[in-house]
Length: 593
Image 1 (cartoon, rainbow, N blue to C red):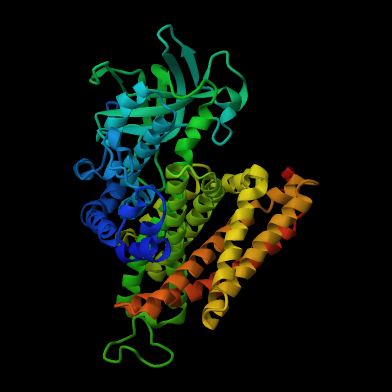
Image 2: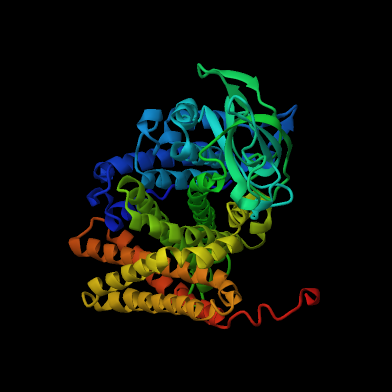
């Protein structure tokens, strides 16, 4: 059986040594002192390890079952869901007026990491509800907020997002689901949606579906798409549940992973719905949910990497195999543990350096969201919008790769189901696909985000890196050599790639689009390089101040040096690919593949 331990110490290091949250001018951050955040993280870690993770394999082996129109979730899920609800975890960063605790988003993200790492499929139920509630909070009427949010914040009612149809995924302008206006201001929603996570289950009294549809007679294409609130059970004026709406789960998809989450085909047969936001502005409202979801999915890549790494590390320390070439480390035993071998060390260091850098990147992104929302900081909003496809695409790609590396540590035992390692790889795979496949994230980054607002947000990122390097240069020779110089070189590679797009993309857009995936990864490496430089600086400062735990900070520095020396140089490879242009990519006719 696998195990999971929440990385509370690392999270505390990031919150307080690196991000210095309690000293920021963001409303609510002054309350985030180490004792306060530590108490929350410790309790979240306990629930993750003791309640959620033991159900991870249960969800994988049992899956969900459709019985007479109702989806039955795996054994133990309902009791665990009730425990999470009772602890107030589902509304941690939601407004107090709707029953939340109004904590900053960065705390919701930190706790969300633990829950998702412990049990990916389970945590999707409340994660999707949070996203749906956020969309209603941002775009709903006062009546809609009062009707739905208290129950959704408490997760008495859960939420979904309904975009994909059998004939269209990313190209939502092709959707056929229609909305017919009614005399009372409601709409009749008719159509079929597929791949609807948590679309039907037995853990909540009601499910609030947010459904994209086209109002009959509206504009063609994506400009005619609107968003509707379509509850499983209609809600009476007094808040009680009324009649069953005309919608149903047609089937549960058979999937590669996340078996504990019900991925449904949803059929709407004249179901009653209400417009959320403005007519024909559905994508604007849905993107409130999707942008939050994309950060959450990036987190899922990190989460599966971390839980897989923890178990691979245990195995590497326990499994006896071969002898250390420099001399036996376990002379009284028949062999040395796997961890003595350099290639196993390389494998584990690849994982460890990615995971810790990704956690820093994710929490920094969450702090930018807090600054954007709580301070109404447009620069922070623009920067996190630029970084969102990088967080989603890079972290899920590298997170999946890390689960494969963790599986590799086990050798053949990693391929056997009883060790549990294959589940981490199978569960991680979906994160590269849903909420916009990673190729789409790369196209969004290069095709839209780089040029947004005249390119000022990417220029702000370059300035941020340049200023960090300038402010910290010359203070320590080893820090300059090991952290700042690699970061500056990687940043120059990123700037060169952007310049290539500017010079060649206008003449032939394929030159930019063919390099978009490499650009996303190049950008991701620079972001992790920046976070490692910031973490390296914080670790050196802690050691200079005389910390009571020097081993933690020395380990942090050693791990950072590994990333800067062994992973960050990948920016040069990605730049070379980008600058090779589109000619080789587009050389073949479709018939010649």
